[in-house]
Length: 86
Image (cartoon, rainbow, N blue to C red):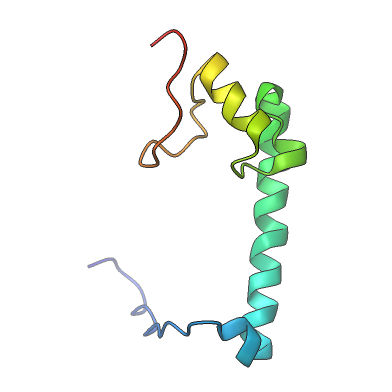
């Protein structure tokens, strides 16, 4: 176990952002933060178009993975398109 306070218990709520304002607010905050992270990643790797697609499976983003291979920013646990040079 890690030092410090115990992690709070987490309860998953399907469609929770439709039911609870604090869940909806957290969802918005998480998306805004994620978009900022992806925009910063675009500065390091503009070939993937992250400023516009935020890493979602847009055709141009998938084509960039095929052409350039995955960057260190990509999740390797996801099934990514094959790189042309692989």
